[in-house]
Image 1 (cartoon, rainbow, N blue to C red):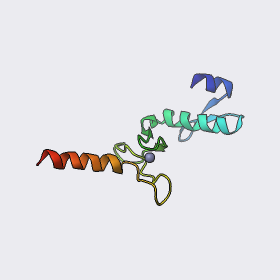
Image 2: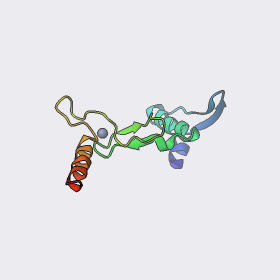
Image 3: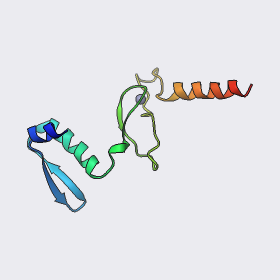
Image 4: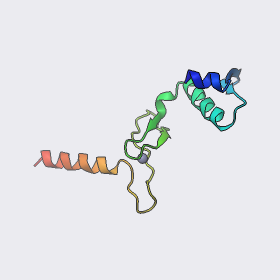
Length: 98
Ligand SMILES: [Zn+2]
């Protein structure tokens, strides 16, 4: 992260709602600033990678317990992320109780 901060000349600014970051380098600067603001707000652990589709999502749940993005990958015919693992876990529970 630090090489990006230097390369994009990102500057921290203290604002009313905490730390903000400014830059003058377009989209890459916007992205790095968004990540830095999440880190500054101690929300970094809520940025997660979905184990099914690798989508990066922000966990809005109260206790930060989400594992899947809950997006339906590939449109209406696509699978719902997490459903395969949930079905597998359900089958394993059912099998062990037989
Ligand atoms: Zn997913």
